[in-house]
Amino acid sequence: MCGGPSRTTVDRMIEVRELTKRYGATTAVDRLSFTVRPGTVTGFLGPNGAGKTTSMRILLGLDAATSGEALVNGGGYAALRRPMREVGALLDAGAVHGGRRAFDHLGWLARSNGIGARRVAEVLEQVGLAGVARKRVGGFSLGMRQRLGIAAALLGDPGVLMFDEPVNGLDPDGVRWIRELMRSLAADGRTVLVSSHLMTEMELTADRLIIIGRGRLIADTSVRELADRFRRGVLVRTPRPAALTAVLAAAGGSVESMPGGALTVTGMDVAVIGDRAAARGIPLYEVTPHSASLEEAYMELTAGSTEFGAVAS
Amino acid sequence: MDAVAAEWWKLRSVRSTYWTLSAAAAVFVFVLLLAFQMAHIWDGLSVERRADFTLRPLQELGGWAAALCLAVLGVLSVTSEYRSGMIRTTLTVVPRRGRVLAAKAAVVGTVALVAGEAVSIGSFLGTRLVVGDRPFPDQGASIAHDLPDFAIVGASVAVFALLGMSLGVLLRSTAGALVSVVFLWHVLPLLVFQLPEPWNERVGSVMPGALPGQIAGRSADSSIYGDLLPPGAAAAVMLAYALVPLMLAGFALSRRDA
Image 1 (cartoon, chains in turn orange, blue):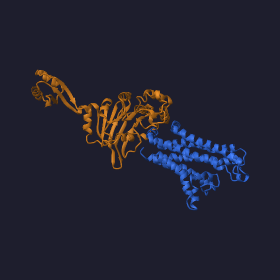
Image 2 (cartoon, rainbow over the protein chains, first blue to last red; image 1 turned 180 degrees about the vertical axis):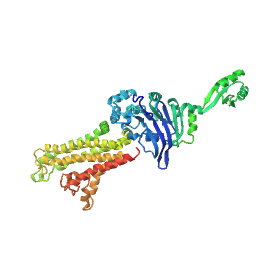
Image 3 (spheres, each protein chain N blue to C red; image 1 turned 30 degrees about the horizontal axis):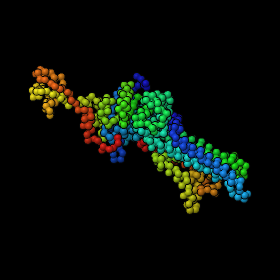
Image 4 (cartoon, one colour; image 1 turned 30 degrees about the vertical axis):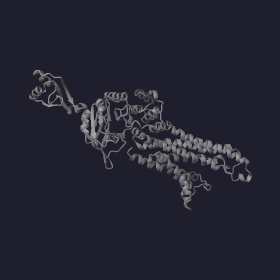
């Protein structure tokens, strides 16, 4: 694929530093800083209107930042001579001329960056649109348009990829296809930034998460760290809750009675709970480590930073 | 050159290009049909009536109508991208916006120049061919003598196309740009013609449609336009109609968030 071991460290990197974008009185992006590294899928999460699309537009040189920097491969996007060979982007799959055939759409894109027609056929094959290459885009379903947009992003075989809400409106097969594609692109050593407002989706696709709300950074973390941070103890069921409570409390755990007779134990992992119970002959019916779902964690993190529900991202 | 090739690919891969070019071609065919009709009428006229019967207005119809067709092509080349949002894709793959606009102008301008010359010169030569050796009073000059006049009209078609393209960038709306083009093409000259003397002739001399005639050094007696400009000044004004809006469009495009 493109690039090799000779590449420098700033290659295949997205760096946003103190980025601010104001539209009149509205601050869409507020001193946002983060770095996206190669080899992983990075989820760019936030409620609608959080500033994800604006940040991506600034990264792609479409909008000018009010202040701060948005760098791709160590420089500004506008300085790239043949940007498609370095950065592939899908912002809005609907932004195609309905009267143009799929082959022609990719054809002019390829031509603009000195990419050959053979590559057009390759990406059409890769996204499963080879059979409709000569059809007009106007007749495409949303899923087909997403595939076409992804084909466009892949045309230049770039090391950095940005996708804005790529799974919106896709059927389950399409969602799974995109998820696997993202993961394989990252596995090739590419930098992949995928925005979404759905944690449930990112949980399955991303390794790292950048969570923003109202234009500000809320969390820059890995999926695992986030899950750990919101661990909520261990759910234990036993026919002798009083005895177990005493034993675990004596061993340093903190135990809370739940409605229905279950216990929630914090400060102690599953193995210790099992061992202590076994030592005293207390039967256990269930021992379940219970973390808040990432969705709950996300809701908690972004609580208070949601723009009014109806604003498009 | 990659940007020019890409714009060329864009232009030839949408149907609206072929519709507008077909409309220009249809105008040419229509002019020829009218020429047959005029030849037929000529044959039935008395000698004194023939002295007032001119072919020229018909010959000029081709280039005049082609200007509107190609201006529409210029408008659509830009506003179709704004309507669909594809402009953002364009500016992402070619981040230098001046280059995008220059490439579009090169493609639209060249297509319009070729089409404009074909229709304008075609209308001149075609009508002459149709009327044959009938001595129309305004067709006494040789073909070589009248040809440059029609070539200038053909070039003005490219000016209109670039004007349409620039208005498309500035207004970002198909309806807005089309209305503006039609206004400049025909409505404004009609309004200017109604101005009190001597302003009707003064302003009428700088209307886009008035310029080819003045560049060719022809009198505008029988038209709504004025003819006060010397050929050089008229050529400069015509160039300004192409370049000033283009520069404004370039400025707007590079300053605006896409």
